[in-house]
Image 1 (cartoon, rainbow over the protein chains, first blue to last red):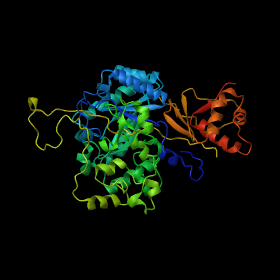
Image 2: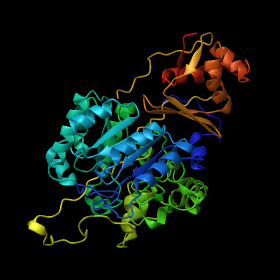
Image 3: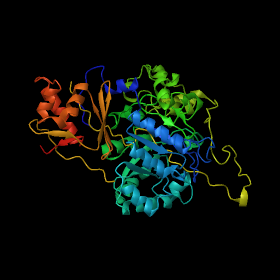
Image 4: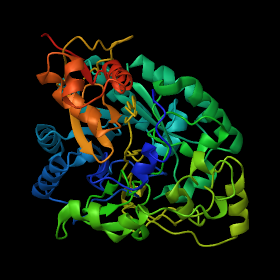
Length: 410
Length: 99
């Protein structure tokens, strides 16, 4: 990133923290329906919600995005391609100058679809894969999901779609496979994208066992620093900036300031990792629509006020990590004005220890196909547990937004 | 679609005519503007309204220098603006046009 040093007090990050008239980009979960049941699904997806936006409502929302000049939307779910109007909505968006990047488990990427995608300049695809081997991936995303994703990548590559994204949520079990992920991406002409495991949605149930250890975080940081802008992170790992140099990206929490999430029923949340009543700003069906939620909701206006650094205020690294991820703190029961649970200085671990056995917040809407807290499998039709939904849960709104050049003219 | 990589070692020649790349959208902001390239899927920040005015007028001006003058860039500021414009050439946001 080439940046001419801006004047004191006019850093872009400071401007962004005060919010923009429209998001830089946003994540739009189109449906809670999914054919997989990833253990870490951010949106606790599985079953379709009967209140999901209709095709007409989706189109009206796209019109609004166009008026607000939102360059592109990251579409996810659930598995968004399950919606029967999915491809029509993609076409509608691109015809209205709203670019689309969508996340998928690959199950609906046929040869014909791959060819169609390769022909469009305004559609990008992100294939989710959480292990460089079937063994590691399928333990998280479900049996057969590795093979499905690989088939989709083969089809995209064969159709001539260069530069699609291979998106990986970094876990304790795949952090040792970073080079292998890079090789897979290279093999299919894709770009590797790594994102952070959040304790959000069903991720709350598995975060303790799956989030990288402190040593692994260091290893990840060093690996990312070496790769530079070659590997995307969707600004996921800004909490690692306290190790030294910031990773490429904006390095700020954009929640409600430059990014947000629209869920399948039109609820607007501060970010894709914060699907909880606490971070619900409004609904696009309300008077004034999405624009009014973005510009005038109490929650978003509050987020754009200067935030207290709280327990982190005496830390010399606060300017680098800015206290980390709001959602990660919230869902692990930590105060929002304290350290991130994965603070690289160990303050988060300490806070988790001191926190004791509090009940952590549960995701407000849960669309999982199966009850999440049942330890013993319930009897199901035919004796096999339902395979629920998978989703592309790893979508950060700034995905792919490598803030390349930052020309200034001061 | 294959993202088109920005030209390596791109330079900005103030004597030549330029234009915004046809796949780039500009969104004015209080600090300047956001520029998004649909081909490379990259975002850039134009950190002043004057730079935005320069970029917007490139296509109508006979040269990069003329665009800067038309937007009110002074000769003292010219160097900084040329540097910013070179960055935009490097990321493919603006490109030389056939005069």
